[in-house]
Image (cartoon, rainbow, N blue to C red; front, side, top):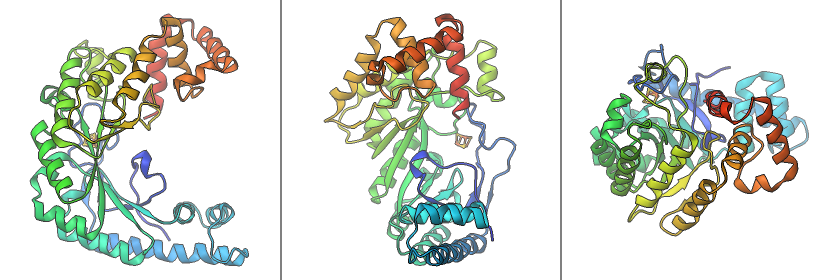
Length: 375
Ligand code: SF4
């Protein structure tokens, strides 16, 4: 037994069952993205998707059977998860892990599920919710241009069927930056999409990319992004700091000197400018990705604004040597937050790593290399 699954999901959907409703990305032109390069977009026939849901239901029954045979009475324990994977392979492991976390959340892949007819998407969501009454949340990725073209009734139908959240790559609110990176969306489409999605009671999460304007458009990028957030008031904004990947058009722009990658401090300054410029929103900021230097930069506006600005100020006030230590320690997985530097053992370990890479002058190159490994 098997089902078709796509390559990615948001980190916050780690406990979700993945159901693929379309394949790859219909746009596939963003200069910083290599996820679906060379792969053709297609809609999966609805019968095929529903068949996958049926397969997952059968796999769930098998997993529960394994639990009963081991004396757990149908309860999914870590032992049942491992046994399911060892006996039957990846799909059983995935479904068992999903059940282990309560079978509460489903993520619809790939990059832009809203390209399906609304009635098809509604049918899929209804089918999933009927098959698995434990499901509390169904989420998906969508592009802003597609969302802006849908009407209010579409989103009401999706919300009523139980689409709980849309994850959307905003990247920047600046039209100059969006055009430069060939995102294929505009600030006004982002705002229209936000109004329609949130108007239907569906939660919206925007992903923004510090550094994407390059040194050339850094403040334009930050201010434009804050302006669009102010207009759209998404439920969540997640930072995903820029990492320039080899074999992307953006990498070629860097090589030819058209785009200058901001250094770590510039990108933190951009985050500061964005947070300082947010007004009248109730958005929750999340930094739950290893690409972000300050993963502790989290909070809900407006109450946590000062707390977040203080974290940034604390980092920026560090002497250069301590910054080098923190940057490398963070990227090497030694630190999660600034306070972790107080641990002498960890600090000294990172100092030894710094001397291995040949001192601070090589740090930017080394950090970029490590960051590329995270994408
Ligand atoms: S829309 Fe998303 S998946 Fe498609 S190319 Fe752009 S960043 Fe990549």
